[in-house]
Image (cartoon, rainbow, N blue to C red; front, side, top):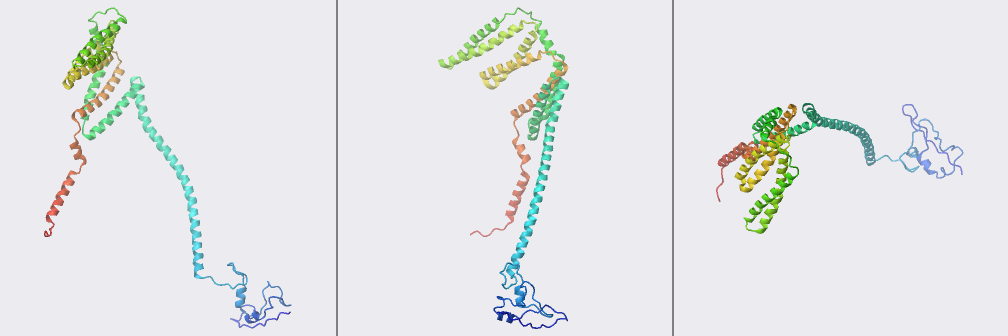
Length: 402
């Protein structure tokens, strides 16, 4: 079967130039059903563009036969995109652009985060080093001064600790308006100067030595003195304890007083025997004199103060505690010191006594809470506000009572 050759219809020129080669008419192409089945002799290659004369324009069939890049079936009519598809394509393009910018921002943020970590580590190291210097410098200075001025790092530790405690206590009490901080510091300083002078001149040791020379030294009794003192003390104090317990009318309390008195008396008697034995040694006699002298004076003061505050029990407690403290001070003061050690002792006494006087004043006088409240309570503002409210109420008209 030979395909019929389509008749070409001439098209008018536009501006004297052909617009497109001639194409077969749509009706003729569609009227021959065998054209696409058996090629004619003049059909040639189907893929080659059909020849046409000058002045032919593309027909609807030619437009439909163009390749469709949108994924439609070959040979199907190519339809223009609708509004919905255009909006969807625009949205997809915008989302792609936004994702690209977000990914870029994430990448840059990651790089910036790494740089921030490095900077933060360096800043943290610098701050840690400065904090360490802030601690190391004052501590090192205190230790250096203790070694340089007084011959021992221990003095630096002691003085530094006391100084920091004094600063803390004085700062808090000054804010609270208690403790009489200035007065306590002045009294502590005067006491420290006096102690430094006494120990620097070794005046206590000279005094104790002079007093000890008034009594001739005897022979050392040996350990027997300690044993005799323990037995004598146990018997005397034990009997006193039993009598004190029997006064309450029960045998159990009398027995408890006896046992307690024996234990306490034995210890006190042994200590007294040891002191007596030391008194027979020529080199230890100044220390024994200082122990007994200062301890005795302190014990009498403690006895009087204890009796004024707590009766018989308070008197005994004050006697024992004060005697022990005074004895320790007397024995320590019998030692001979060089001037730099005496000054170190004076500084330690000054700092400790200043803190002690502040705390003692607070314990005795307390803290004026009313004055403290006025400092942190807006009393004037509150009173003025109340007056304003009352003034406004007096001038606001009231409605008739029902």
